[in-house]
Length: 212
Image 1 (cartoon, rainbow, N blue to C red):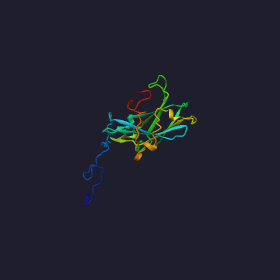
Image 2 (image 1 turned 90 degrees about the horizontal axis):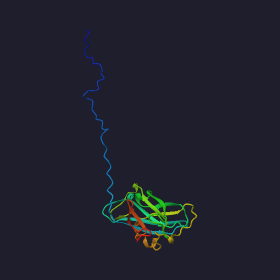
Image 3 (image 1 turned 45 degrees about the horizontal axis):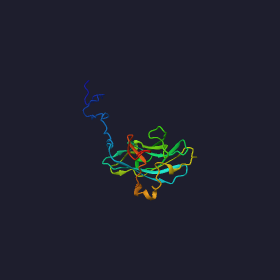
Image 4 (image 1 turned 30 degrees about the vertical axis):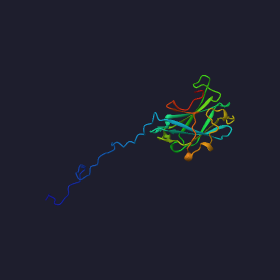
């Protein structure tokens, strides 16, 4: 008898069996995007605070802060500071950031520019060079009605041989010291009109050398 009883059908390669769970490929599902940074204020009133620190004779050492007196955050990457001084015979300089609070620390950069009789502004007896301080985007923002706290900066003659005389520097104020201007929690209480501040290259605080 060729009819077999109780035999099982041969296995098949059919993968469409309804009992097999069906999974969907979600590799194309878009990931949630990070929230964009808050818009940066373009009109917030800003101020600069400062005091000097006793430096070695080959360098200038100062603490500076930026305060935002507006109602929106201000992106630090939109801002630059200029500290004006006399080169006293030095021809190149190195800058240093020793400390800044939070995300500002390590995200401060600088350049040095020499002035001449035909530059804008022109060189004066108190300023023939300036140190321009700027911030990477990673430095973040200074919030509404708040301050960066002190940013501790220094520059020196690259050869470390020139004696820098702070007393004839436009941005140096001898009476603004740690004893008179240092507040609590790294705050600075003395404003400086001779360290100038720019937003997108436009002067928003202070008076440049030779200005009214």
